[in-house]
Image 1 (cartoon, one colour):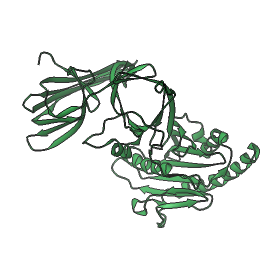
Image 2 (cartoon, helix red, strand yellow; image 1 turned 45 degrees about the vertical axis):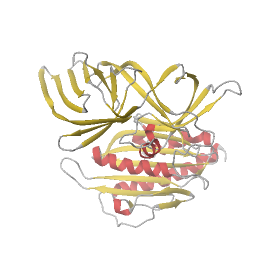
Image 3 (tube, rainbow, N blue to C red; image 1 turned 60 degrees about the horizontal axis):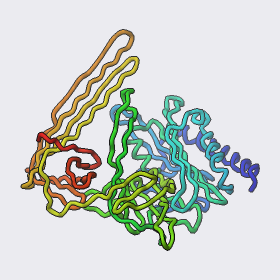
Image 4 (cartoon, rainbow, N blue to C red; image 1 turned 90 degrees about the vertical axis):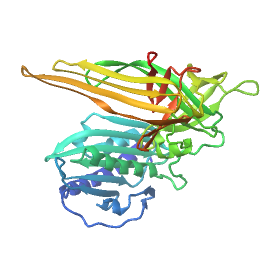
Length: 442
């Protein structure tokens, strides 16, 4: 189909969509009769997994645009609202026309098309289709606040579009609806041969094993309008079969288990280049960049330096495991401070956590936090300052691999990830992704 033909077909569908959307908005606060539907559905040749009716979603339309609606009652300060999920039947079109198609789909709400894109994810799906996700907020229509998330998925010959509209929904209620929508998007099968969303390594993936850390430093803006210095020990865990994760699995879980439940921490990798007399010179990393299943592919330079790695000219040092039952001796402190000011306001926040580990397996924890904010409007100044201590705790600890278990005197156990980024030194511990410096005076 040529671009003009695609445009005519798409515009016809857009007109029908506008009519259906107007009808649904007109019935926004009317109850619709619940209809049972299967967990998996075929929508004009598009296969998707749908939420069970017990979750509160109901069919709310007919025709080329499949619709689901869920109503939320008023609770406290939250108004009554609704969430609408809309799924188009596949449209014959070339892969290259996806940006234009998504733009037309957004324009089904003309006022929303004028809003800036707040969040966007571009990439490919696990099946190799192009995918674009765009989020816009918020438009007011007849005292209804509307947030829009649109998704376009394109193969070589056809495309599908999905949309979530949040009507007077925010916070936990909005997040709940978004989670269902994300799962639906991940489940989309544009072609009969498409597979389910899964990070399944191919036969030529993998080749590395271990935990490696890279020090990332710089400055970034904070919520007060200022800039903060940061120094983060980033992690990459490589599974020999081809999975990688940027977070250590917690609670003794395997990387496969962690990636199944936390796909946005993970991805697949493949070593390339080299030959009979040289090692791989490139690493391809296919990272899951959003809950919608968007995958970003990056190819970086790669080499080995003893037990360490060099990726994109950055050093990644191998991180040793703690022996089962190993002990440490000392006090480690995490501190955080952030401040800034604008023309009319200023603020700061600070926090500290202290962890003491003894050779005999005993631990103690303490901490505190504080915040101060001022705001000036029309010559009048208001402010708030508050601080408090974190309840202390103590008990027994256990180290094993990259896991720290703290069991307090009541018998409650908290499991955290832990590693030492500096070889042969316990001067810095990274616990649950947070850096704790050893207090030499402790």
